Image (cartoon, rainbow, N blue to C red; front, side):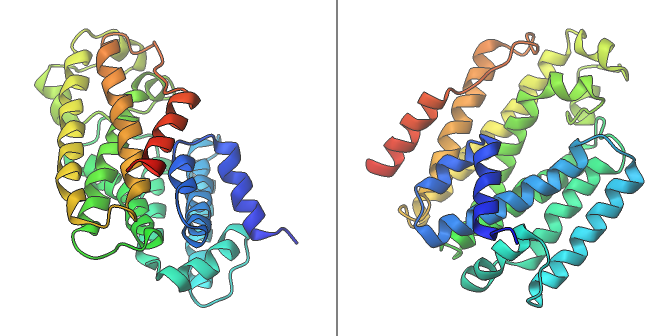
Length: 279
């Protein structure tokens, strides 16, 4: 039988995600909880991203809903959910947030997302990022108000930054998360990726969405001093990494979407060191 803790650690290690840095500055129990939470999110997300029929993807997500039900009555069957069994008891991880993540991934899996209304985009962010934030604050051990508000605000900031980073790559595979209201504002009407990506007005759409992301970062910055700094270090670290990413994207320019922007492993390690030792 697969060792659950080893399994989720390997999922995190393979991912190369920036979130691993935040996990590494946590106490062991919280870190193990975050490994399991991340592995759950990664495996759910892979369902939407991998090739396959929509019906098959929706069936798999339905199976995951049933697995979460089994987890919360104490009888999980998968390695990842078995790794979650102790954390949900120790940190009181809310079942509703795991279901919210599945709901968000279902929005991706149930046909390609293309220029959703802003309200729908923010619902998507709440589900795929805010829900992870809500689970994370439990693992951090800081759930008192206004930690839930931070989880949602920072989740929005991180997800919008991801969307802006991936505009080109998403469009190539038929996805566009830029909201319809901003596309209409700048008269971007293309419905085919090739035409969309060469529309000069697309840069203005991205610039406007970046303002939403920066506002969410600013809201997060205002909330953080009200919380236990030592417990919130993982969130502070992730905020720093993603704010740097957004600044790099702006410096590159929104008219050069084919040019990738990365934060190097050395930079991430420096940020992690700074927030683990000097914050």
